[in-house]
Figure 1 (cartoon, rainbow, N blue to C red):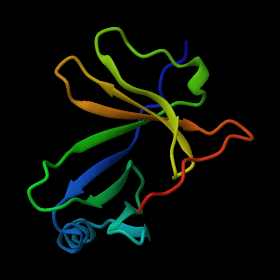
Figure 2: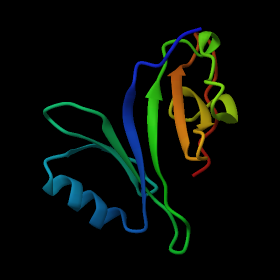
Figure 3: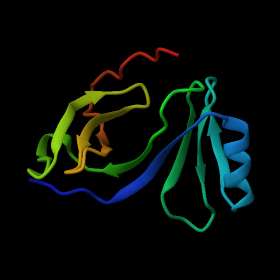
Figure 4: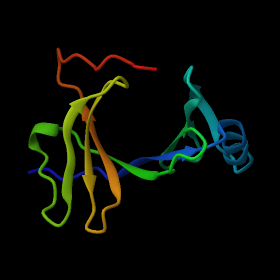
Length: 125
């Protein structure tokens, strides 16, 4: 069994991409890259976890989701106190991702590198 390498980032969902990015930039974060569907990653020049901001439609519930890193998905065992919402699956951002729920039902993302030769999921948006 392997543990995580800790929180590498936070997924922050928003109803307004522009305002949310402006807010974090005013706090010193820099836009590292932007996708073509109103999402992107910011980092602070002094380090710490990245912020991945993703716009969701008005009326949709918003999440703030920790992103934890593991080095090897095959060696990771989720803690028994929570639950697996979705087992590891290849994602279009070139990682394997498992969704876990903590004992209170909050979701978190556990991400591991794709194994050599693995194909990423196609991007749907």
